[in-house]
Length: 201
Image (cartoon, rainbow, N blue to C red; front, side, top):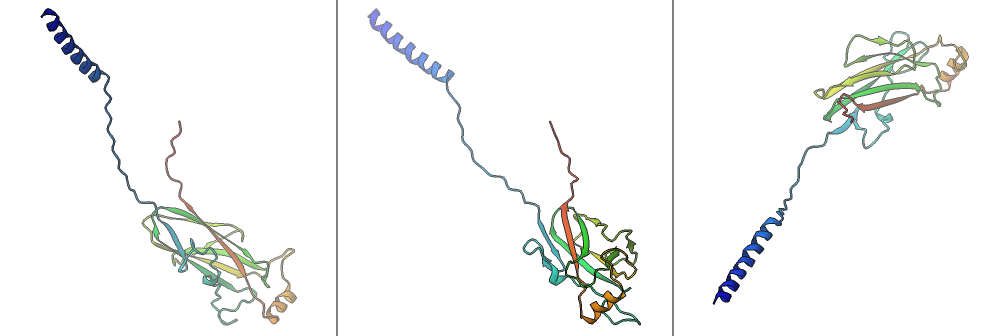
């Protein structure tokens, strides 16, 4: 009988020990899945009613205009005349601040090589900023709360230009008689404003 009690106690002890050991070395495993969602910044700029993400050449939407006066008719370039082109920026689908840089130069196929950018004004303003150098870049910034902005760039057929590419009176006349074109290349660079804090370790 003692043997039997001992055997029962040994079995109970074995099961209790097994349970304690199992609890001691148990692993807690829990699986959970989920996803987080945040909107991506919009970057969808339009220039002169043309989306530049889908089409980067906006030549057909850029017009060099000459207002005309008592000496020449409207939208005809003549030596000494000042014209302009407008760049209208629609940033209503842009959710971050950005900078832009405008540069302009005479196209290699232009019959008039004496075209010069002489100044610019922002957002229909009456104040014109004049450039010291025709190849100087025009820069500005657009804040996140601005949906529409514009820049008017003033161009002159500068008949006082000197140098290798300068046109003389004969060249001016030949361009006019030959029904030539005054063509400028315009480049606009848009770049997100880098006003974030960068943390390094």
